[in-house]
Image (tube, rainbow, N blue to C red; front, side, top):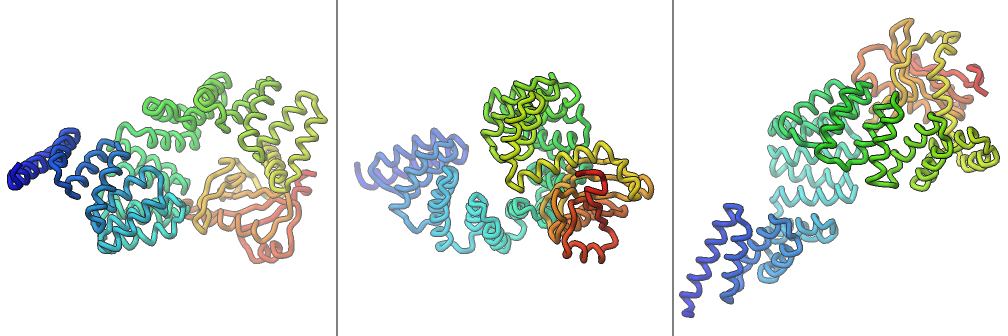
Length: 470
């Protein structure tokens, strides 16, 4: 073929391929591009566009093959390097992705998208501080980009710095008010702040824009379950399961809402275990329900399976010891007690039992001036420094309408205990405008704790022995 005719034919196929690519007819685009290559004229542009088409079709291996060929012809193309990096990212080969992105950035240092993608790699590597650094550099180049703002929020959320996360999410939402991912994650931040009403508000807004998202329905169900609005929680969980029927977390959480109906509760744990026979929470929760039903042998079987998954889970070891005692297998129960010799595990187990007893008998605090009504056990809270924790017992004092944070310790209260309860109080103050006091109940306290206690007007201490706990 005459060279001019050859070039005309090449450009014809290339142009036709570009038209199909713009129309998202990727298969036809690939056919045209390959016909152009069959003419014997190698072109990085054609190879790159074939890679793009295969990438859109989720055929990443084919896409990577053509990107590599394109790079041999044009090793200094930031676009080819960027998309090659994207393929490696999708394949979870983060080191190769990072290498491609860094090479692309050298060639185009003002491309905010490349910096954002480098941030994404560091998110996957769980190096959140580096991720934020790259996202913020990207933001300087493109300050009105809601996606970059959103990713900064995600990184802060992963660091449990929820106030900072919320700040960036809100900025992103102003620029993209119908983005369901932003709305969902704002809801999750408020959920972590224990502001359940606002969390529900944002989850509902997210569902207005994305009616078929199982994660938002799951998150909404979790809030409603924490509020003990179990009927409403079940509706949300079932909507989530319609869209993703194999989500074992949702099946487990749905089971938890039936704590007054053990047979129904067991049904959902069994469904979760059919999908994942080693799913810890379903095994553990099923063991507890079977113990309540006095089916001790089966209870023990499931608790043992749970412990194979998480051998040092203190509460599961406590359950095993309890069931063995119910079966009068006391020598085996003693062996489990030895397993609990690890101080951390032992304290978790004993503190849980103390929490059980105190939650069911708050009147023992009356002689000490507390007339308490339990609001919630294991109340989630954002600590003052931004991380998340759980209050053992969150109560209301009927005498003065104050809120009371109770922290239980099966050892001497120390400086860290004081810091812990102080942070819980600060976290609650963010969203509750009432007077909040703290009460530490422990087995003695050291001198550092006593000095801090003397200076505090809001935190008090009681000894477990004074409450009748040996």
